[in-house]
Amino acid sequence: MRRRPAAHGTVEVYGAEPPGVSRALPGSPQERQSPTMNVRRSAAALAVVGVLAAAAPATAAGPSPSPKVTVPSGLYGKGDPTYDGVWRQSLTLVAQRTLGYRPATGAVDWLTGQQCANGSFAAFRAAPAKPCDDKVTADTNSTAAAVQALAATGGRGAAVTKAVDWLKSVQNKDGGWSYFPGSPSDANSTSVVIGALAAAGTDPANVRKSGKSPYDALPAWAVPCDRDGGGALAFQPDKKGELVANADATAAGLLGALGKGFVAKAGKAPAKDACVAAGHPTREQVADNAGAYLAAAVAKSGHLRSTLPGAKGQPDFGNTADAVVALAADGRTEPARKAYAWLEKNAGQWAAQSGPAAYAQLILAAHAIGEQPGDFAGTSLVSSLNAQGPAPRMPSAEDGEHKAASEEKDSKTGVWWTVGVFLVAGIGIGFLLSGRKKRQP
Image (cartoon, rainbow, N blue to C red; front, side, top):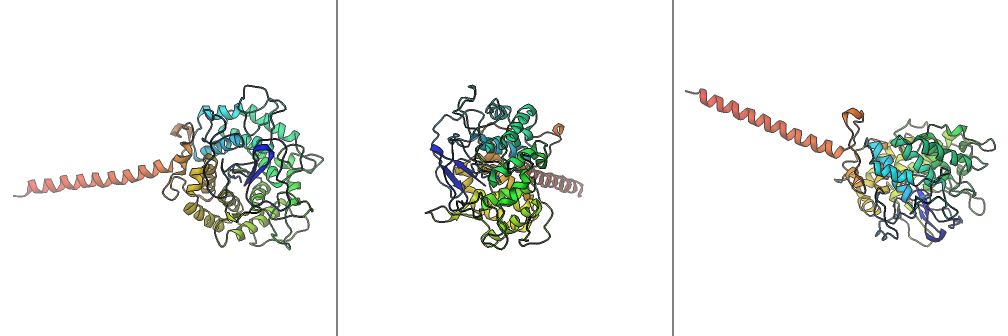
């Protein structure tokens, strides 16, 4: 569910981008996720923000580029972190906490150390000990992702507060946010910031600029029901001022309209399956209409597709994972499960080549519909993610965190328990038969 700036200020887009939208952004850092998702996103991966969640495109799997900078210890993933370091780290920590793990202190310290004195985060700072200067381009997506991660890990309240204050300071007059401060608001960035505010315990409805909150901004990107792509959200109006459906922005906007961040669980089913026209849609109507669009988009194939100018359309793994979370949050569990089933059959190679943000996106998708990430078509997403960096601490009884932190361990324990039961039973039967023989005349 995201887009991220590539080198020299260009933008690598994960998910279909509306025709006519400029692919150039000021500055250098990443835009929302980098599902190698998402994320993501709804998030890394990436997509602008979506979210939720990596270092390679969220479309088709491809070889990971060699790092151009040294990957610091404490940072997850082996790919070049220049454009997605904070994003992929944030998604990783959120996914680990969702599973019940206590992230490694070094991993949390690395993320906290990326923060600038004013509270903002850039995509990656190779020299975090140096003060942020004009060469460090902070962005709302990295900052919002870091807020969600640090709020989830706990114990970093000061860093969270400073980041939230910075986000409030760069809010646009329409109530929304742009990727880089000073640019027009977009659906993805506005949504990922909503998720950050909610995670920090701040009601997004009360965060206003010129009297408008982010919930006032989202309907402006909603495509009317009677138009092509009705119900979806656009990333931004195109150069002609038209709204063009964008699956990435739709998944992000749905979660934003519901006041959700990277983590969501199945919500209440909407009253109607189709797009419902409204002159001035409420944020709940924006969410339900977006859900109707996404449900229809995955109805046939079970996945979303990404089509870039001059390129052949192909499956978009990152945006599909984000769509699972969004659909589940909107109470559309059937299409969400269908999309997850498709991911389980097809997304393994993509995640392996994309890295931590992709694994995190898939884990968050599993969480949203109650699936077990410890068994993803025979692969453990949990082990695969944790192997990307410093090992987190397993939850203990004292923590009161007995979640599926290690479904694969629970599963193995269950298997060996069953084997043990049969062994004990066999031993007992053996003693019984032996005793009977001894008692026979």
